[in-house]
Image (cartoon, rainbow, N blue to C red; front, top):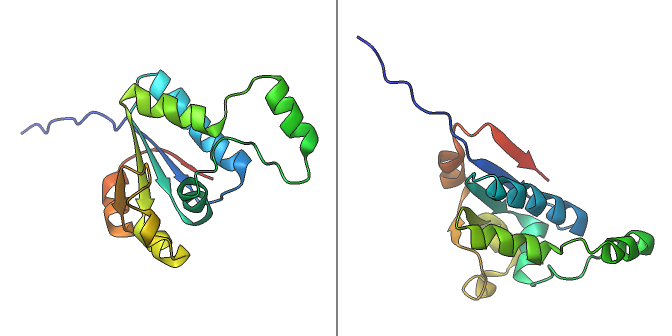
Length: 139
């Protein structure tokens, strides 16, 4: 008896925990590159990254103590985190999920409804949704 061979899971999953602008930017750069290649992407937001999204702080690069990098970033016309997120959203291949536990820990439940976050999940659901994905990035 032969068993059907399932296709490998081609999704890319990005877990964003840190709210540091460089890490959020890097995670969204990975997501944008994946969608540009036609791959589905799921971005999961936890703790300080979730807080950055809820506070809508995606436009201005804020590299604490590194104004030289911020100046270079702008001079080279590098896309902001928001521009990368818009690329992911416009592709139709990306989902942004927020962690309900982090939302509660931050005391930010009142901001959940006004956010651009597509879905709210706890760890049980996150683990179920990401099972079998080999391309995972944690920032």
